[in-house]
Length: 361
Ligand code: NAD
Ligand code: IPM
Ligand code: MN
Image: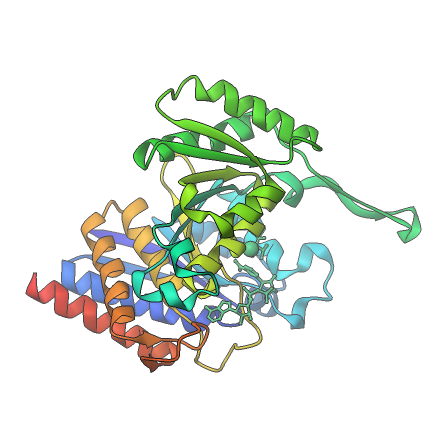
């Protein structure tokens, strides 16, 4: 199958980890007889430097025509002092909004060989398998006004949601729960926020359409605690934009490292942007030591969700699992045995497992 992918490396470790992803796509193409055309465009700080904008028109147009998009990460100190609309992060928010990618799927499933890499006790994280569904194009991130007022003596950010925006993400969450273990935890702050009370009402209304799905409501502060004390109690979690951002970084601790987590940002017709959950990691950028697995696992999500290539996606995930079982780990994983490897060596290890397996199948 011929697929057109737009690659947005972005900033910091973005280039290093998307280089790994490109190699994985190349191997999948040759092992499984597909053709992936990869077109690189700029976003974030790299786009500011080249085009004077974090999201140039040429990038938006290319993404609109693509079958899928793969993004590294954006942001860095160099651009931190720019005005709000010129920051690298605005490019990422802009492409999510432009493409209507309202559902951010963040699966958190530890690999058995990394159980001991987490600071949490093994018996607590063993068996946990969570899908965080984060609303991605509304809430505090996009509400207007968002500005300093009163000569800098006051400030306002606006949390705004339309009912329809809540309904579509909550529907997506119920549908996802039906495909998993029929258990949905809705996370809000309904004891304080009006937006959360409306969210909770909609979850309750929708639950009548999905009687097979057991629904629980959790306040976000308690949910943050239970996520790391009783993680195996969760199946699908759904929440608004900012709560989802924070909870997913927290949940990465279950897997041993933020560098392990992939994500898919999708809309109803399946068009998707795939990216690791982590950022541009300026503290380790350029050293060749970043963990590429969150990005490689994002490639697997792309194969599965945008291209319906389940076998190929499973092969990538299996290759990742095998190289972890063989003891390969990057520096972010707190492991003392096995082999400490660079970004490039980890990528090679995944490629070896991918090609050996595909040949012997
Ligand atoms: P970060 O996720 O970049 O890094 C947090 C910590 O995790 C750092 O110590 C980093 O070295 C480590 N880390 C992250 N990914 C890693 C990987 N693949 N391998 C090894 N270690 C990894 O978050 P931050 O430091 O708070 O933010 C840095 C910049 O990234 C900021 O400009 C921020 O806006 C941006 N950011 C971008 C995205 C994105 O593009 N999706 C996401 C989060 C943050
Ligand atoms: C993420 C990031 C972004 C977000 C930032 C960089 C805008 O933290 O993708 O999780 O908050 O959505
Ligand atoms: Mn984040």
